[in-house]
Length: 231
Image 1 (cartoon, rainbow, N blue to C red):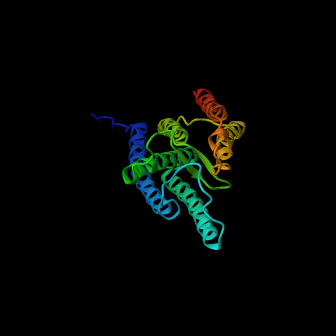
Image 2 (cartoon, rainbow, N blue to C red):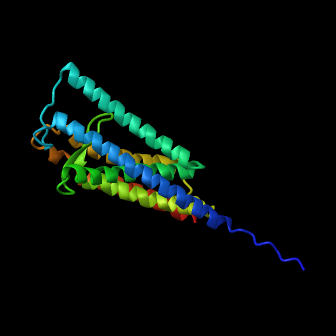
Image 3 (cartoon, rainbow, N blue to C red):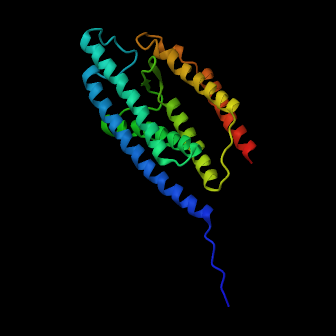
């Protein structure tokens, strides 16, 4: 009598593989966050020896300052390329690569602040202001808001990876992608507006939480729409 061979559960195996890659990506992102924090420790010692406070003083306009600024902008661009490369190598299809990009970016960003707290005991509170990015102009906001974005991206990514493991990817059409990009642009604008005024006493008045909330909630609605449509 022949005993039928047990057919392996491919969905379970796929989920296990995804979980292993997920853990590796998390470790990579945490280490990457430390590298980012270490660089900022040096930069603050060079440019802000008396303390990193807002409003910020004009740091300089000479050739050396411009060289440092261009170097920092190049480093930020290289960071995004590294995150994209890590996501590309970790994923096997477009959905997974998008998810891993979200995870690497989000955990890198969160642990950047974790490591700064360890190394500099900063930020003192989640509402402390920070320079977020320099491309194409300066971004600035309280720490709370980029961390909130990062937590949300992690949740999005976990949902995408989980569904991919069971062959039920989150479906997104071109209009969905355009709408999600528009939501992201609104959030970026909310960061850039105060970033342009960080040397002024009333810099905080240029950050509009309602504008941030509009972009954030719009992106959340688009993702939930895609998720429900995929079912």
